[in-house]
Length: 357
Ligand code: XXG
Ligand code: FE2
Image (tube, rainbow, N blue to C red; front, side):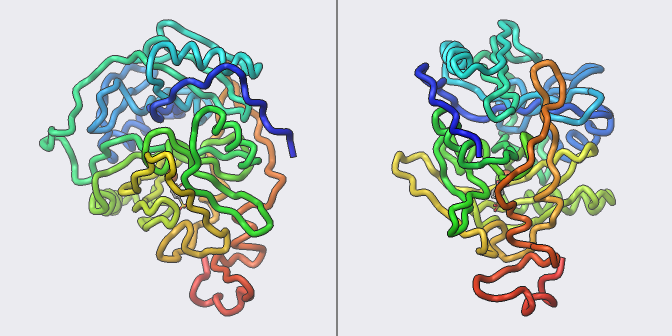
């Protein structure tokens, strides 16, 4: 196990929220069909190299950048900070940690001003910015919204080999833990951490990393998620559905996971709960609780545990992936015989018929 990441003496930047992800895609036209024609994200701006997309309630320039490139990967997990000075604070914070940094007064992408990009101590490409172009908030434009309208960017999810080390670092950056999954031996399999007062802005999922597990957009209500499933069915695109729809145990949100044309995972998510009080209680789930990831006890498909997107460094090279040394949740709960439903003190024998994957 590697040593904890030191806490810098420079104060952490005041992070408001996850703001956008820059995704590298290998076929811009196919990705446009998926994100614009099927999911209905709003195009703020586009050119031959990139498409800038936003959700219906957003007023900053974009929540997702699709950039054409040779290898499907994530170029940036981008966070908005409270003030221009917080970009300086982020620079001092990561410089003290010895992380590679790049500051650009004009921003790295259209619609975003002075920004800092870093490769953080966990190997993820993070961005911090305050300045952005304001665009029309289309919340009231029901004439433009489909039954499956995506209204907000809700969160990111990151795969990392050592969850407690990652969470310790993120706490030094000002994040708070809202929920986690652990066992009685003390292994932590996943943790959800927030700045805005929802269950999370990002989550740390235990696995080979650094990789990106998913980016999640919110709908207003559960029926909007069902409408997305119906549309995918009607278009004979149901192969894009990986998991769900269902109700999460963790977060209590209603969910659906999709895979885009490059395999990047997108979650559609709605109706988690308020977490903004300073004494918001931590919710810890036992890894053997069959309702932790799906409140109705439905099995999680193995690909959801194994697959994730590569991430890039500041030069655009793929970051090497480090194997997780601690037990993985997939092995813990599915095991060699391929059954996902476990109960403490019982063998999987009794569950073979009902819960075969
Ligand atoms: O956003 C999430 C998730 O990280 O995508 C997964 C909330 C809960 C869950 S889980 O599958 O653990 O219920
Ligand atoms: Fe999620």
